[in-house]
Amino acid sequence: MDTSEETIQNLKEEVKQELTGNILPFWLERSVDNENGGFVGHIDFHGNILHEANKGAVLNARILWTFSAAYRDLKIREYREAADRAYWYITESFLDPVHGGVFWELDFRGNLVGTKKQVYAIAFAIYGMAEYYLATGEDDALKISQSLFRDIEKHSFDRTRNGYFEAFTRHWQPIEDLRLSEKDQNENKTMNTHLHILEAYTNLYRAWKDEELAGQLRNLVLLFTEKFVNEKGHLNLFFDDDWNLKSDLVSFGHDIECSWLLQEAAEVLEDDDLVKKTKKLAVIIAGQNMIGLDSDGGLYYEYSPSRNEWDTDKHWWPQAEAVVGYYNAYRISGDEKFLSASLNNWKFIKENIIDAKNGEWHWSVNRNGTPKVNEQKAGFWKCPYHNSRACLEIMKG
Figure 1 (cartoon, one colour):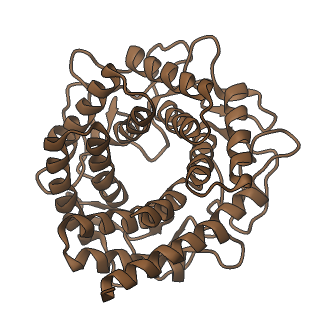
Figure 2 (spheres, rainbow, N blue to C red; figure 1 turned 180 degrees about the vertical axis):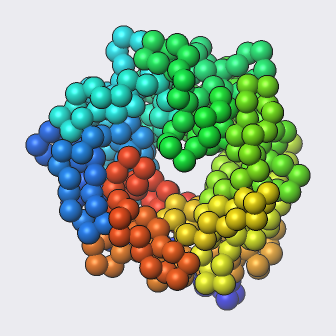
């Protein structure tokens, strides 16, 4: 075994230990809501549970995906039990039985708080339900995924100008505030939502070889190659209805995540030409993404070229995606710089992002490596999906 392969084997062993010894145990031990059902909506930096915090669709769908994927690969009973809990809670509380789609937000008892139909959240429900089906063979989970796919295609797909609209009212009517969060621009078409529809459709196609689904997944891959990935190898983030670009912001985490998700979609479609194209693009994006790497191996959050402003905080999820994206680029190209970037980023994660005291990973650290103590350990956005998936991908790779 050469030095690189020995190093990779060590990496695989370390990420498996991190997944099974830290990340998943944290969620099993701390996040289960035995009193009100499902999972708690908020755990703070110090590990304190806010029992009356609201519960979000995205967090619950990501928990469903995480434990389903972990069970599918590792066949550990506790992972199946957590996946079952997430599946039943989403089915009983987040699915809209009247108008389709999923609700955005519940209170801690499971009562409706936010009925907005955010397509991003529906995509994650598809992603999680499809994974649960693949892990367990539960036919109803596949049927739910199929129904949600049809909801998105019926209400969100722009048949005139292509692409997907962001958000609607409960009754699928236009809504003024389309944003996922306050930091986002209020635009009708965003890279972020398209990326996670692509991710969801990829997983659903693994389970359901439907012709319409295949066509829409291929269309999404082409949208990325033609609209979202720009000539500099970064992602365009915000557009209006007519695909006029509304921002030059660079999101390093999304860039590197997209690099391997696009390739995965092409491979699931078994389209040789598209696989070749997306592999080439994966290496280009990974190479350009390296401008966001700090000397300590951590990946910055964002960069605005027009303002020459850098957000040098290092959030947990771009680090997780960097380990996978750079490793994938190394596997494609054989270029050692990508393997070094992946390994250095994993070293950064071990030294700065993993919370050895309270478990799981810190939300973010500043450029000096100091954790942001006002951020969640678990919540609407802080979840086990990025870091668990990174571990599972490296373990398989």
